[in-house]
Amino acid sequence: MSHRTHTRTADDRAADGRGEPDRPESPNLDFAGTTPYEDYVHADVLTHLQHPLSDDPGEMAFLVTTQVMELWFTVIVHEWETAGRALREDRLPVAMAALRRSARELEALNASWRPLARLTPAEFNAYRAALGEGSGFQSAMYRRMEFLLGEKSSSMLVPHRGAARVHEELEKALHQPSLYDEVLHLLARRGHAVPRAVLERDLSQRYEPSAEVEAVWAAIYSGDRDTDLARLGEALTDVAELVWRWRNDHLVATRRAMGAKTGTGGSAGVAWLEKRAAKTVFPELWTARSHV
Ligand code: HEM
Image 1 (cartoon, rainbow, N blue to C red):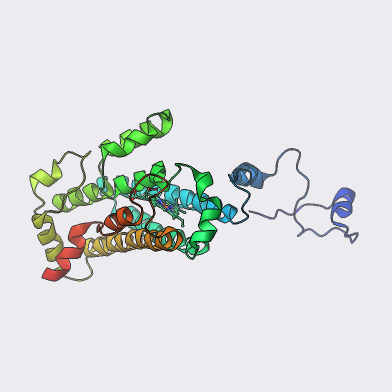
Image 2 (image 1 turned 90 degrees about the horizontal axis):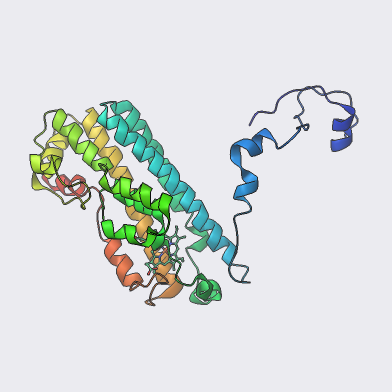
């Protein structure tokens, strides 16, 4: 935000109590309506979206951490959609820049577990009942992240039937190529033997690992270490690792806060999250390493 120079008026001097002569470097205080900062950031909207459901003072941190994570999900979806489009257009540097930004954003997302990472069951119980059936499982933006990673599932749209915009966005994302689909098409255009069945797969289904794709990555990693495709593989591996870390940090925080109780969303809780955390993102990028 710029601190624009302007000539200080008598009102300015009254406002900040400094009666010294005009200081051209002092910030502008005189705006007719809202400030340009507010027009851009909508801080007034953002900072009035916190409506805790209990009287417990600890709930605010739970609510805001969840909101902060939703904002990071939104940025990361934007980066991966940018990367996917750029890959389709063979603009690899643009895709790489978006993927690298997303890795830094995933680090910030993961760091935001801190305020919740050590909740005791008693602390969490102080507001848990107030959450009712609310659960991050119903997060549409998280679901779009999973879809972009290839973890497609039409049943995940069901909770959003009643919300037209969200449902429409998810429906579109379900049928669009994931980030990984775009990568595999690029590898095929570069002459790698990605099977036709993989390239023409039903995009609304979960991506299943393929031995041939694993062989493609093994070949890319066995060659010259500094090719653009090897760098792409590493950028995707960074993303995969950081998503896996988010899932594991979530699992450990949940284990500390509620042990083996049933989740507010109705799942088996920790046992269900363990299964989710056991999945690898971009599986062949990991298994190919055994063959290099
Ligand atoms: C210590 C606090 C938390 C606990 C105890 C917890 C617990 C759970 C549990 C038990 C589930 C499984 C579904 C269910 O039955 O509800 C779940 C899912 C989920 N939670 Fe949390 N959660 C916590 C914090 C958060 C936060 C801050 C977010 C950020 C948005 C979040 C996002 C999610 C998401 C996205 C899922 C679905 C995961 C998937 O589909 O693989 N959770 N959580």
